Length: 71
Image 1 (cartoon, rainbow, N blue to C red):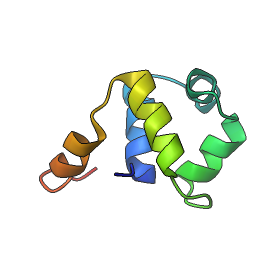
Image 2 (tube, rainbow, N blue to C red):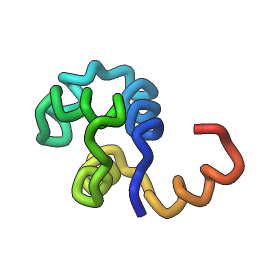
Image 3 (cartoon, one colour):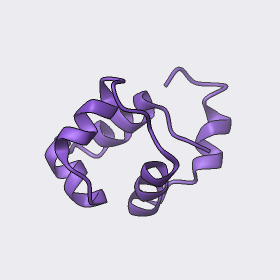
């Protein structure tokens, strides 16, 4: 499952990280995160996995929860 761009932003902001800090933690450029969050670049399976692994997130759980919350 893929994270949405809104969930990427939500995870970053919940962890109180700038785009630069967030990107550094997952091993991508901050400009790439900016493009993802603005909807210019898609959230790939690889990016979703990096975020999930780094922040201990169960992507399947998040996808299921999206049905009940507005994120």
